[in-house]
Length: 177
Image 1: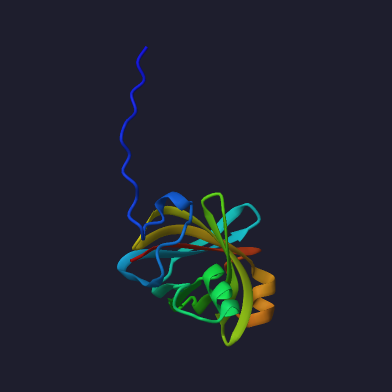
Image 2: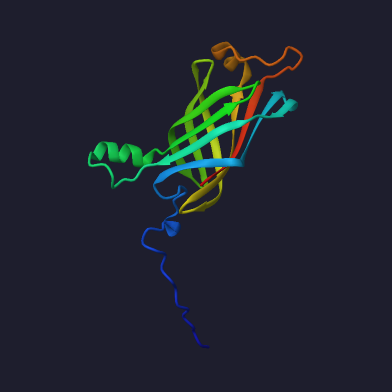
């Protein structure tokens, strides 16, 4: 039996494809028009009572360059926590979702942040699945579950009276490039 060793080509020095990281290289990324989807679904128990696409006015991702700062504490804080921002501009939902912390695990990103709705910051956990990643782009799909009663009390957000709901699901799909 003969063993054959195939030659391997190492990745470019700036590439992080083999490191298991889910984020692209440092920089500021945005979503091009038509390359995103956002949907708001109202649920009453196990039944969806309303499903509507909403306009994603803008989305951005900022991954900091760890070599650009000299302050070690700022360096660690920004390198570990990239900034995601989703802006919704729709008659049913005018809000902005800004991440504070991002955790990576098993091909997923968990964003802990605030949904700024009517001037009130409502805490949200958005779970994103990384569909595709390259050094200069990132394609993600994810959802956040929002308890409707708490959201209504905290922010004043209301659905029409004829639509019952116990929770809302905010679905987001975006390609950052």
